[in-house]
Image 1 (spheres, helix red, strand yellow):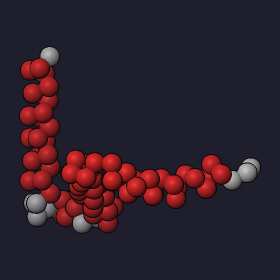
Image 2: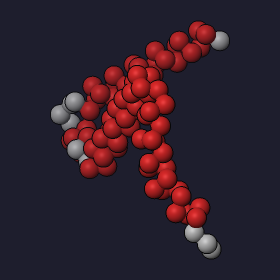
Image 3: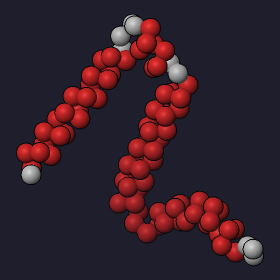
Image 4: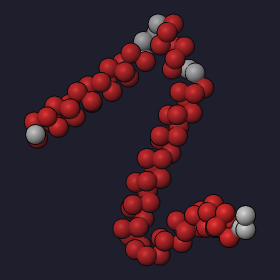
Length: 87
């Protein structure tokens, strides 16, 4: 089972490199796809999500429970109004 996961990880990384090499080519199809606003938006979203996740894990490991209000603020702003409103 471990061999399967190792091979899958290797093929995944090779696939990512293949996509990156293909995207750097000067063909019209590659230019059209890589310069599309949707691709830019998705790549920016993935970058920000990964940065936020790893940054928050590092901050939580350093400061412990004092990091909790940073997570509770957006949660309370988003979900508490819908929980408290009468329908």
